[in-house]
Image (cartoon, rainbow, N blue to C red; front, side, top):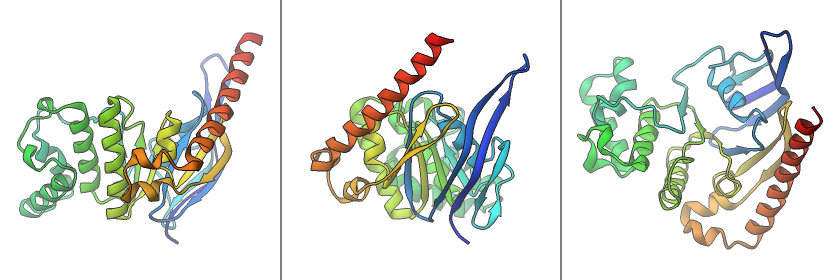
Length: 267
């Protein structure tokens, strides 16, 4: 069996005072190989917790995650992670950062250099491969992070707010790059975001999660990611269904946020 399966996953964090936080409750979904899914919801709905469980950084209290027929038991190169901040090695060059994973796997120098150079060309960094990380802009650093993730050839790419710290123009360019890489590599991608617009653009499947305990509130299947592969993203936003769906989801999340605030006032 190929693809990613999340089976009845729940996550509870026990606190020192004897109480606990139920971060996730009975989350289940199947993601086929090559699908692109965005996940959003109000703060505290467990988006990042779910991503960390799929990555293997956290073990769920209940349930399991299955990838290509085997249980996820911890971090593994088959699942690549791209964080909001690139988490790059500042003392290494761009190329050395991209080569790091293959070097740890024992890939011969010539082969890993060829692979790194190819990925840097794809991500538009071919002229910057010998630069130090600190010489790059934030957008370029996130491109390096994507290339480094792809260099390990993971089956699934997990992205936790990867574009959240970028300015609007750079963010739009990076959104286009994510769609390009998704289509060219055929990778399965799960992307967490707080931006409804970004979730619409970068999710052929979009999950809206409800607040604590985190659970799937509604799922959408959307045409915008596929359209964005060959169409300017600004044009995609003019699609008649884009604004309608955006407002529907914004209203949904706004109601959830109001519910959370009401609980806090009553506490």
